[in-house]
Length: 116
Image (cartoon, rainbow, N blue to C red):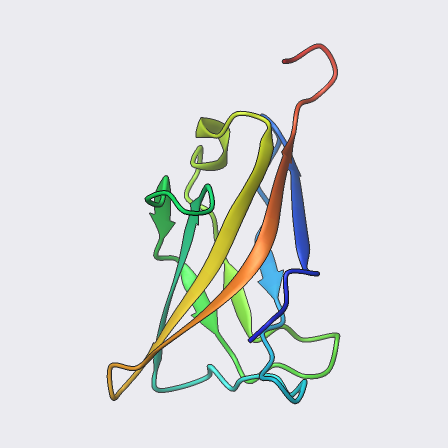
């Protein structure tokens, strides 16, 4: 599972570009999410219910550090509902046998100039 060294940052109120993730196993190999997996992403505070869930997550085989194996296409405005601060972003991958892999990432929302 990916360690929490992965950090994703967004500026409040800005365009929300797709989020590319590189999810690895404990040996550092990328998981192949190209088929047989259903992917979602949950965002919230650690230990609390998810603030929202994204279903627009596409899986791929991925390659090294150049081609991600999961890409989140944010629903317009979802990130704008979060006050500036640090959150947990969990990639939730379920395989055909209903086994679930959860990978955690740090999500940092920054306030822009002149905002609080």
